[in-house]
Every structure is written in C-alpha cells, then in structure tokens.
Length: 245
Image 1 (cartoon, helix red, strand yellow):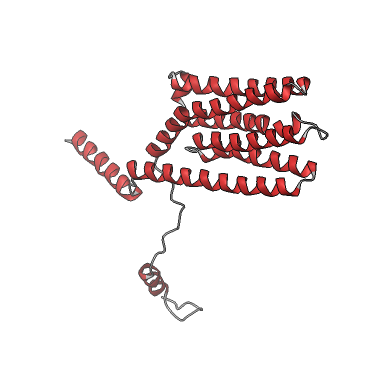
Image 2 (spheres, helix red, strand yellow; image 1 turned 90 degrees about the vertical axis):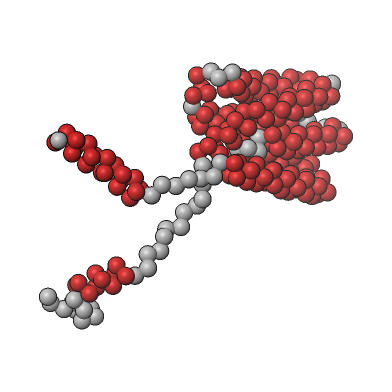
C-alpha cells in the first residue's frame, strides 16, 4: 500500500489513528422533557385566569378614574382592552374545558402567547393613550404606576411559559418609560427603570423555580439510536426466522 504524501503513513495506519482518537460529543442545549413541557402548558392554562383577572381589574379602575377627565380616550382604550381580554379568556376556557384545541397543546400555547402579545400592548398603552401630554401629573403618574405594576403582577401568573410572560411584562415596562420620556421627567424614568428591572428579576426567579421543579418531576430520558436500531434489526431477524421455519 502506497504511503500518503502528508506524513508518510499508510491509509490503514491513518484509519487506525482516526478510530483511536477520542470522540468529542457535540454539546447541545439541555431541553426539558416533553412531559415537563406538557405540565408547564397545563400550569399556564390554570394560572393564566388569575393574570387575566389582574389586567381586567386594573383596566376597569383606570377606565373609571381617567374616564372622568377623558371619556373618549378611556372608552377607546377600554374597548381595545376588552376585545383582547375576551379572546385570551376564550382560549383559556376552551383549553380547560377539553375542547378540540386541547388535543394540540403546543399549538394552543403558541396561539395563547400571540394573543397575550396583543393584550400586553393594549394594556401597557394606557399611559400614552389614556392621558395626553398636558394631562394632570397625578393622572399620568397613576396610569403609569398601575400599568407597570399590573403588567408584572400578571406576568408572574404566565411565568410557566417565558414567552407568554415576556409578552405582557416587556410592553408593560416599555410604555411607562416612553410616557416618562414624553413628559421629560427624569426621576419618573429612573423609578420606572428600577421597577422594571426588579420585576424582570422576579419573573426570572419564578420561572427558574417552576422549570427546576418540573425538570425534577419529569427528568429527560434518552435512548441511544444505535440500541434502538439494533433492537429493531433483531426483532426483524427473529420474525424472518419464524417465517422461514
């Protein structure tokens, strides 16, 4: 066998070196098991009712208090908020009732998260849509504070799915900051930033606790593909032998 031009070794020696070399396993991101994800979806469907109730309660309060000064703005905002709440609540009730959508939990989670995106933007827009630039400072501060606090309180109940929680808390942090920047109040913007950072940290802690608990209850199990293929070939060979006999 002819020597290779690289190192003066034969092809068989290079093959033996390649076989003896340590194989480095490909590092993959550890994903939760399917059972853990299904239970997380179940927790999202059960806890989300409380989160929607928080948003509805604060929405009604803001519509009444701010609506005395700006009824047209309050009516338009309340209509937009109620429409988004109705769609989210309908999805949640259909899943809990075991409707046809409950047979596709991952599809329901995607649909529910997309509806929460609309609801989060509609709810968080209260400091911008409810109060104009020349509004009374007490009304503007009340709308911004309740929106910021309500968004993060509601997001805690959606923390079983991080994307669903982010769909509510991120607009809830952005719009009060935008309202503070519009009014030119640097102190209000600083307070809003600190409150938003605290809320995000709290949601991440809750999310980590829930995910860790689900991972312990439903550990991920792996089956080597070679073992599965070997068992399949063995079963096929046994069946062929029986047919031959």
